[in-house]
Length: 206
Image (cartoon, rainbow, N blue to C red; front, side, top):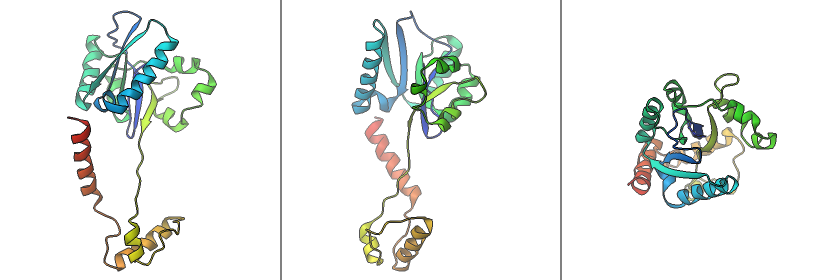
């Protein structure tokens, strides 16, 4: 089963154009970040747990850059050399489906026990199910956004850092107080993202 990811969600998806040499070998393509360091150790743990339940099965994990991952999956769909299981972003799901790179796993999904299926967020399962009885993926990873508050700036603005924010009105009121003392209430998010992205790429994608 291969995974594809949409938007902020990475999912596994099963490819139609399989390059399996025999039934006991599976090629598993992942983002390059998942094929190194602690992420790779975690992936290997998952693989070991799965193969322990399926003796004789071998899974080869291969890290790919974002572009290589997509182009390889599309090319593999037409040549029969694609991976058996892969990661990607759900935002690319339509492209992969149109290229014939995905298998409809709806029947396999419904064959799983209810307690297994109940583990997944229903809204994310809907993202993998574009129409009735058609399912192309399973949610795998996601990310969220966090906002950190500078406690020193809050003190300087006369705001008690220990006082919780209960709603957006509280937050906006604090932002006005911070602005009033000559501080920036909200930083330049774009600049922060650029610096963060550069740092991550230097650290994770040599």
